[in-house]
Length: 485
Image (cartoon, rainbow, N blue to C red; front, side, top):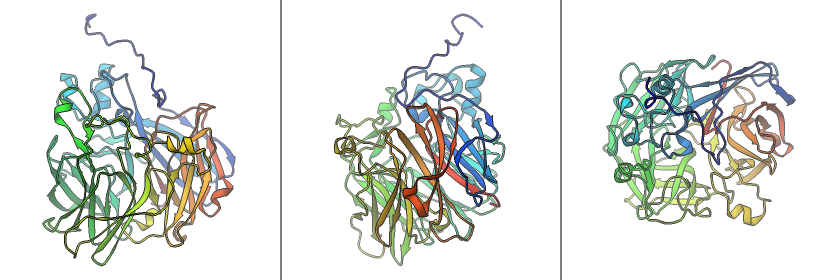
């Protein structure tokens, strides 16, 4: 190797979101405060971006390599394991001992040596279906991992070669009745294409239905909604901007002149009945739950008025608006039997938060309870007004859509909470009866905990806290898989 080709020394620039974790490790019998419930047995998975090498060009925190952490819980004990996802990108950089990929979802900024290597990071979400643990990033097919060891088994899973789309959503929906996984891919035929593939995978892991649709403009379709009869998409004005990409910028730019579009189609059909309902400038990326009522479909999302991501630029040279970025749980409703018109919006609660979840046993069906990380309502007003999705949220809130009541657990003013997921107390427990699980960064102590909160006693605090002796990388989404699944 010549001096000119020698990789630069490994030095990471300062990062306001924290230094990368860059560690793969195992801990048997983590320290536990309180008592892990005896009826809780399974695995809690968490995935997020963790830079393997210093970025070769300016980048955003969402573009680190996928890093999965697992807390294996059984008989009151918790073991910990962490592994990088062995994507094609990870392996290419490991071999070169340096970063080879440019800025977020922008192949124009990559090293020419990786022109034929998948850019997928598998760093956004993790789901369990047909016995496979799938690590997901919406610009590429899934990566298959062993759910027990976290070993990477397939770095480019195309469902036995049947996946026609070049992309796969980070948020597939698993029908709690049929076991089908419904999914889609946007920009499915390549960069900036307006093609969307919509398909389903049976409980054995085989694609059993597929159709193709078009979108009004090419932009972010991060999450979607599924009911027994409908599939719905929310297209937000986080538009793909190839001109800016060729200048070295990230894939998206927020265009405040564009409307949102709420598209609804029949599930299992050919997509020709797809209808788009127009709405004003809004930002919403995650669905709590959805259900159909005859010809009406209702979708609950965390919706804000403006761009919620300060690292995605505003195209119109508008400053980032932290107040306009505040998300509140909002119900979107349309009647597909009526004349085309704007979709209806109703804010359900005053709480500010992001990353809503539900009891996964009620996916695609009418549901009563939802959960979301929120801001402490007792926090000083000036701090709440300055909050954005990138500032720490310090409550887990349980929402009862029947009584319209909300109950919160407060983690403390010096800690930030990640997404929570729900674990039922028993397989046959009533909806929402169980535990919320999620990680919290102890800012002053420089470490991460897994907390377990009883949903029937939210204000009592955690029934158990699993303590790690270090701080994990930034997490995005997580998953609970009970023993027996």
